[in-house]
Length: 582
Picture 1 (cartoon, helix red, strand yellow):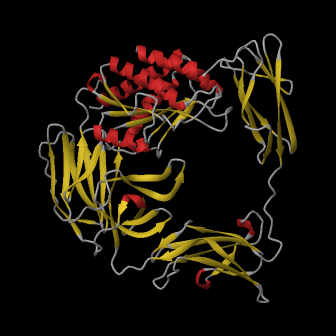
Picture 2: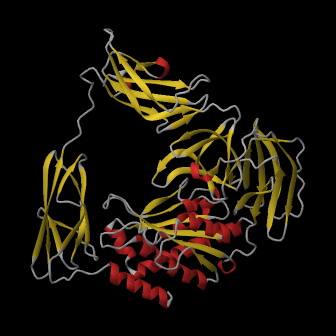
Picture 3: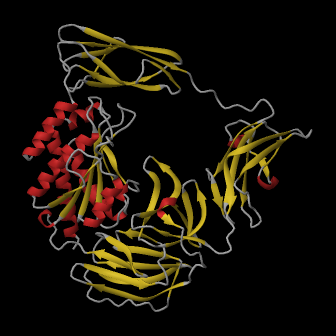
């Protein structure tokens, strides 16, 4: 560890993990955050911190206190009032007590609507929508059972059998495909429930809808090479699942809108979504071009291999990799492959062949076969030529020949997780990353970092930085967190691109050898720094800061060294594995 890393680690412990004096009984409860709690689930946790050297009893049961003074226990509540007395006892016999009360009432079981009314409706897709011909709306509505129900254009809804509704009658469902005559005019969709007597209950949708009718296609162009496509306008805490990034000025056919996302038709069988701010629609609106892919070229220079093909415009594309068969697949949407596209290789060292195909009537596919499993590639436009720049596997696979990108997660106003001791993820990732930088540099690697001090760096800026500097490998260092401080712990790695799996697996295996629990090596993860295809990357969630046992480990300087050593050894294992496949 360098002197600066040692000083930072000592400084971190001093400011973020103040030790409570053992001569005085102290108690800080982090979970729950209040003394009186109304809850609807029976499983609850009591977690907090006492003075180092103190003992803790909850309702006369002694609980385990870690060396950091933290503790966490799990309880199954009974219905009604549940009271827990938490007592900390100092070595001198002094005590301090806090009382926590849970009021647990099971949520009532669903029941049939007892009066003539509509309770609610759920329409999918949800949100304020602009639709186009052929789009499908689906509805589920709950109301008074046994009646006639209808919605858009008086299309009837059927009452669902109770075998599909948990035994509760009065659920109605249906679907509607948008027709050329439909308009909606940014209005609400009305649902009606009718009695045989003619009495009617009406409920309007919470969102508004309109239908796009354009004589010529509505188009836009991507604003820069950080523009990305998503599979949906909705997602989890990391946002909608990203399909991939596009270059600047790519032409997109907009066929709808959901909330802040445009729906775009990539090709006749494929749609995607894109955030509205990432598309410039203030462009000349004209018929979509018919693009014949022609004039294919395949060549290599001193550093990279390339494949390019000419198009009539900059069309959208998607890509993936077949790792075991050593292939990169690029689909150009809206393009038609000219017969006899060139497969001639000129001075390539990594590319062994290129095959051209037409998997659907308006998708041109290039299948790039390689000497080795993919190491990374970039897709971009040179005028209207779509180009794939393929990275070659480094000739000398040792760390002293490589540039390693290192990303300490969070920072500044983005603190990340907080442990029971008060340890903050943004500080711990920097502590670990500075130590990791030192070890990598001792191996001879060149290390570039997204931050080296305690400051905020936007994730988009981190991604742009690494895509621009183009390291050989990228490691993003984080600590995990869960609302369950008792049962959820361990180490995990995450990746999105298939060709990144071997790197993550090698690091994960080494981390398990430190004795950490296996929380998995998980694919298809939507973290922003897992999305690029330019280089192999790994998201290393070292352990769970929310778990007191894991937190105790990561606050131990000796175990910190074990973690960073394991990561370096994992990278070396990966390099040896790649070298063995030559």
